[in-house]
Length: 278
Ligand SMILES: C[S@@+](CC[C@H](N)C(=O)[O-])C[C@H]1O[C@@H](n2cnc3c(N)ncnc32)[C@H](O)[C@@H]1O
Image 1 (spheres, rainbow, N blue to C red):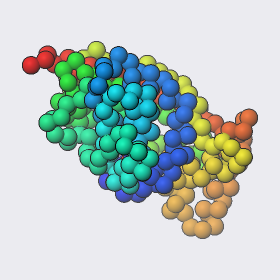
Image 2: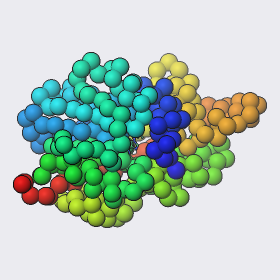
Image 3: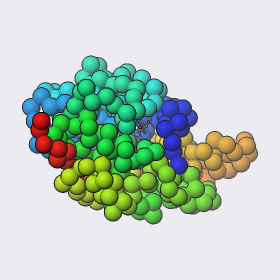
Image 4: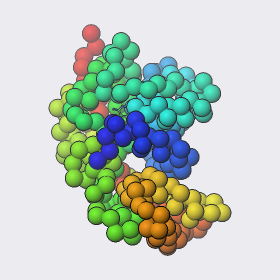
């Protein structure tokens, strides 16, 4: 389970320190998500990036469509600082709970790269998000499919002997796999009043490391981000060294043509705010 409190502190701080590496892990998913996010986006549209993190998706949209106005919101002040540091005025970033935004401003398109699986009450959150969406506006987001299809999570946990799912929310509650079940996500979007709800599966390569020290890069990412990070951080010195060596051996076995790559599986969801224009 990863709660909002975790994102505001420990987990958000780790992502803010590692944003270049976490961005790299999504490079093979980004084109598909971006195509869906930009599809039929009107001239001058207002776009909201939910759980924007260090801002990669916001900035990619702003680069592809300089006519649109992009705002990113995130719980983590450290991540919003990171986003602002690379924005160069191309998008606005704010510290805010996406489930509690004022509906004074309404957006034509809501997007999120893996930023919507952490709400305590997802139906209430998606209802609140619909209320900040223009009638006829769309939401487009990615999230992970089942844990078993996501080797970036299962393989490091198995290599380190950590119980499957113990650290990542599989058991229920907010977390990276909270939206793995298609029927469950469809139910909660529909319950929140979203219409035209659709999901498509995407299998992609989770690039943990590349470059001259691809294994070192992958270890640097996985020891701080994901299901084994907490165990490594909490281990005493000698045990920590052993865990990191085991992680390095796994990453070396996963190195191929200069990159360390694990299997990953996501959904891309789209839905429409079918509320009639007033
Ligand atoms: C897995 S990270 C993804 C970050 C970013 N979208 C990316 O792709 O790099 C999830 C993000 O959602 C944010 N988040 C979680 N719950 C949130 C909420 N209720 N409101 C705003 N942001 C939230 C976290 O702080 C975190 O930055």
